[in-house]
Length: 310
Image (cartoon, rainbow, N blue to C red; front, side):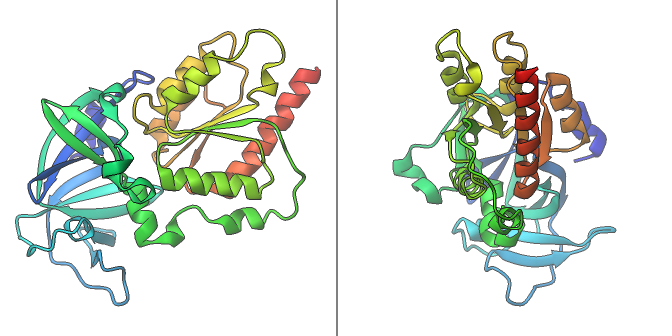
């Protein structure tokens, strides 16, 4: 995909829409957020790497950078022979560039996040699921894969590290209510565990922006709102309502706009940062920088206390 082509299809901020690039593996239809895609290319010879995860095919150098190649069919249990006509989807998220082998690439569809449903645990594997949602695109069901979870399993060192929090040293207990919207079961657990280790003990976890927004609007009118929610942390990619739409709703509301809101996402780029800033996000941080997230939370809550007292 050319950079200018990708730029042309970037969505307006806060519309709760997503561009899905559809691709196939073994005849099954999958999807990836276009915001994660850097380019598409025909597969090329790959140099194997010793002691790598079984799904890591190796490395190749298409131009000026060496890329890791993940054999996505093998990861998903499709053991058929590689075909020279296979496609590499080169992705960029969590500040990493990774190529994923797939069999074919279909077209791009623009849909609403409300058209994406969370997979039922009976078919998704629960906490082990690599499906973050099931979408209805052009009359077809598309499985949206959790690429962050896939990479976290293949290379745990690239994901959230509890050691970053431990390096902050002893911390006072903080019981201010922190609300977190994160759809990935794995990352939600990792974020929750890390924040509790940082002594943030009053966490409210939501699996998407809509759940958080509905809980927010259901709070009783009047009184000190900070007793119910002192700070919001949100991912961007989520079924039903994404983080940009949630940010817009919160910051456009006279009732909720003073609640500090942090966008914590693997998709933070200059373009995404501009969008988040226009929507009113107080801070925007790139996963997996959990230590930085704790520092920013500390700062925003201190600032909020000063404003309340002032």
